[in-house]
Image (cartoon, rainbow, N blue to C red; front, side):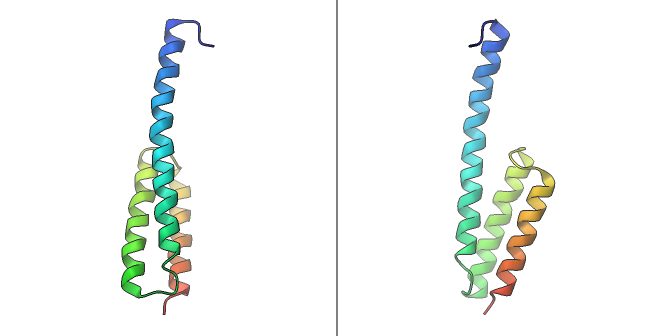
Length: 87
């Protein structure tokens, strides 16, 4: 339990940041999952899903929820997977 005034403030701040991080991670996971569901479908559907997934990944990296290299790796693997399944 936080005792000092500064520690209590830090706890409040961490809780606010945690809410934003959880929200960003959920959005990231949802868009990546929806992009993966377009495997084997029309190329236009895949492109729109891929661009929305890229947007979510970049946003998460910009806000520090995931690291820069992790974002690059996710984007690369997603693009490769969708490219293999193109009809």
